[in-house]
Length: 262
Image (cartoon, rainbow, N blue to C red; front, side, top):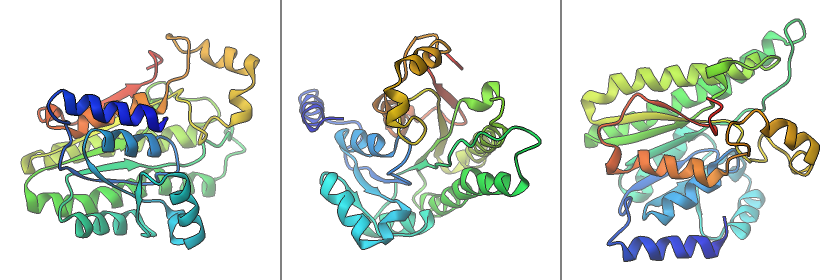
């Protein structure tokens, strides 16, 4: 996302009489992966105060390098997502929104070759980690009597993915987690939803060399009814809507952002 676009978006929001996330305190986890940077910038453009977590930020050099390239974003030095949640609340005095942006490589592992250890690692990253983040966020949000959690998962479990059962299973578990947490926390005025992308242009899953391969892209996008890959910013705008007061009567939804594939 260009800084020019970001500036124009802020100006347009101000001209319309305010921004829909003005005054909101947000944590975005694993910001270096998947749709993390786009989510942080779009939420910030809508007026939120955003704090960014990534496990790499515990290394001072890595943190400094990220800041140099993304000077518009505020980063945390928390190692874990639970620490990031607590640091955000301490830093901003509140926690209104948690964007639980978990990542794990989509490993190609046909049945008979996939190992149980690989499966366990995937579940740890895609199910256990978001559970821990949501638990930490719930502690703060319950005290305030309001909050929004947005899990960033995947549309893959809607259809299943041959040779990628571990990834699809982990994301499916996260979708089920979001649905169950939503029903549990509704009484606390905490809305919980999942944004489930697929075929979204992100280096976490689509390296630059793959994106540059015209033949491979033609084959891949032929599976998407809209005929193209999505942009991270398109996912981020859905996250922003779910984070806003405009979605106060929406909870327990798994929303595909996949160009009609799901």
